[in-house]
Length: 339
Image 1 (cartoon, rainbow, N blue to C red):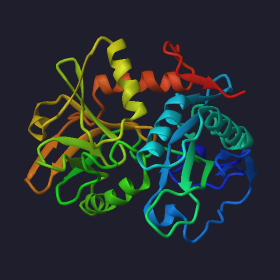
Image 2 (cartoon, helix red, strand yellow; image 1 turned 90 degrees about the vertical axis):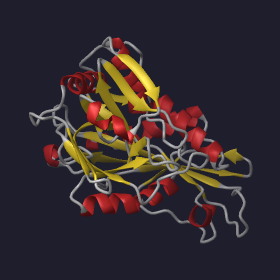
Image 3 (cartoon, rainbow, N blue to C red; image 1 turned 90 degrees about the horizontal axis):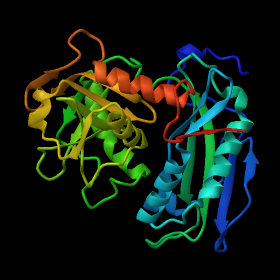
């Protein structure tokens, strides 16, 4: 196993041994190729560079107590990448090709899968982009699919401890009929101003509101929002946010634990009525929120008053992570063991 400081890994890029690549050309996908290079030779007129034909996924591989490596709901990531490809007119990656590439990338870099109990995992990044040259605004005829991996620690440096976020009102991440439901790079480029504003104010991430009225919660930078109130798991319903696989899983687990679930528009005015709030996503899993600062409105909302995550968030977190690491029963057949 690679000798790294596993318990203190940042959420960042660490060079690994191999990545896996495949090209769509002449109307069909080619064979998987293994590369040791961290670089891609790309045409200067590639549509990814000029017209934003690019989508990606974020997944993790976990080493369990039994030493086995597990993937969590890879099929949902494959479907979401197909959804993104449809959204910006790229060639879809077939499910079997997606699975083969991910498994191959994980197995080839097995020595970088962090040991059980360190809190770290192997982040898996499938990437699809238009590699064909076009000068006019039109879809490419050639695409490249790449899967690389890197060992990571928690997305928020606080780990499973309360984070502080700030509401951003002077920029938007995505429009209701735009690309918000697709996991494409342009959405993240659009979020960078808000991220910078939140960081400059001393906050970990921005909370975006609906683009039309600025009355409803959309999402938190690179994560979905959820709240707990009256034994109910509440998360925004919006036509401009990415459907999180983690959030989807938490909804099921909340129901398993006997909570009611509401997916609906969530007004900013409700923030002072919630018992617990959090951010969720592949990178963060769950990050409990201790403070939300609506800077422009001059309001601050406080949670986790004892400095610790709330009981429902804690139970959901422990259950989800327990399934991912093979500690708890996988009742919904979410886990695939890499063999």
